[in-house]
Image (tube, rainbow, N blue to C red; front, side):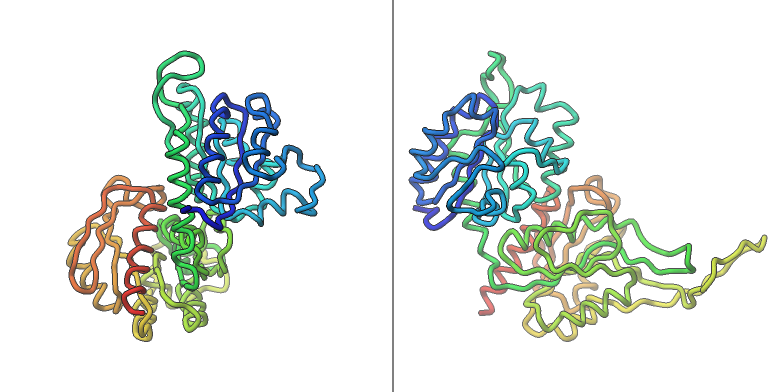
Length: 401
């Protein structure tokens, strides 16, 4: 009964793989989960609501505006009730709706209201699965923290052999178990996460900054919230959507970031400092736009405070994870930074490695701890890297308590 006490919202969309949805539901119930079921209009062409009602022991919901004795506002109530949302099967149409934030039926509307982890089991023909639009939509959802189970290869509804079969019910339920068991492992923790670049103004028009997109720090924040932590996210200017459930503090400059971090520092249990903080700022900021004078221009820069080092001096028992983006002598520089910042773990990556630079959804990091132990990770998504960092933080926290 690995899912005893867990509340799973199971949804099915209109694909032939919906014939497996009752099998998924039956296994969830056998594992002790309490399950509510949502069917789209198309899903009802493949599976009968009555079957799922009997297996779940609860009414099956199909309409956005249907009346419910349990939930006064159905889509809001279902979204708040669920510990995890499982969509099996997830069609290309549903994936596109979620990727673009559409809300024209019960399922898509409740998904915009939900802050619970979401697990999707895509199912479609191989050509559709590999279409650039579908791949882009899948990537968009993964960037926002959705978990997508890789479809399996085999015989498809058309009779063709290829990739696109929905994962088997056993595989889906095991993934649900993994996500929900992990879900609460950071509960009770409050973490400080920094992300993105800082922007140092020259005048009202121009500024000095770097190429950081904020994706790594936002990935850490997403995964920490998903695993039950309270997260204070302090971020420089980015174009990324704010992760749901974080205490968000937008800042601009290194001085502003430091001020906010110091303000909240006494309330947190650990920190992941992923922001790319500018090392220097202009000594003087012009109040008016600087004009061209037909010659060269010299700008005096002064050193910014080292935020990680400043917090490291007063961290006490808090676990501190830092980052080192290097282009040469990475290992030596990372070890020196770790010591200078009084950190417990530093994640080293090399800007020149494909898949490890700014603005991409993957990273290649080497983890170095204060005892000198080194762990090199392969290229993986930034969300997966975030989980590895949080695993180390959780392990250290457990050893200290």
